[in-house]
Length: 377
Image (cartoon, rainbow, N blue to C red):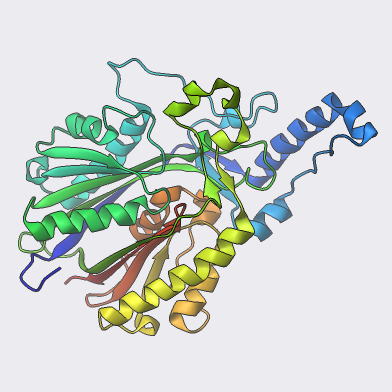
């Protein structure tokens, strides 16, 4: 952003949380019941040594590995059914509001109400999320129509970093003078792309939707957050991957295979991403003339408590206080692109004018985004 470019301001945020929640104990009970059924079905192969018996999961394993204690989901019954292990989300007709759009609209309505301005001032809608339920029409255009917003809209997907990439895009639209305000939404039905039959990852994700309104500083009212700088980074990796897509129809023998859902090499991701993100944060802060140790709050992507704690230590140069390094994944689990926005939405009201914090994401790609913000008076 040049000195003459309009300042972009995060003016308001919104959050939609599903009514249903699944505890670790409930999830473990369902997984272990399914594993017992599978072991019984393949007892002869297991006895012959041609198949390995499935190992039970446990609450202790989940909490040590991730820090997650529960997760919100749109459908609890289907996930906890040992004969199903998939949420039950019926298709809707083309004349009904899509389920992702519905979630996004609810989060957006909360943000718009907090903003206190008419939607006629919004010139663009971005739907930034890890999975879209269809290729087209864009989810963003459906959200735009449902909210009665003019202008333009489009979808963008950079997996767990989609929200920070969306914030950067919105800030750039403001800086260029293309629009005066942007609505970004992050609807995530992560339970639908999670393999609940995989012990190593069955506990990771939850469902949620967030919304952010970014507007030009010269028209923003009091409050909100000045965006001081944004930076994006991508490095190709297969260590987090999901191969589901329209081309699966052209190779039907692969349909339904585990790689059509979320697949992760967790240890490799940890080893690669923590130093990449930590260095990116420190370097970006230096470019902006900021001392990382002086950041009042970190709103990091909510993937894994061990990753977040290590990144916090590397950035601040010490063990962060709980209030400095926000953790919400114990209640929400990993909600992909929405995680850092949930943390920001729920834990920023107590900060004082002039306080500086960081919204940061990291995930598949690899992808990472940093957005430094300062509390306005």
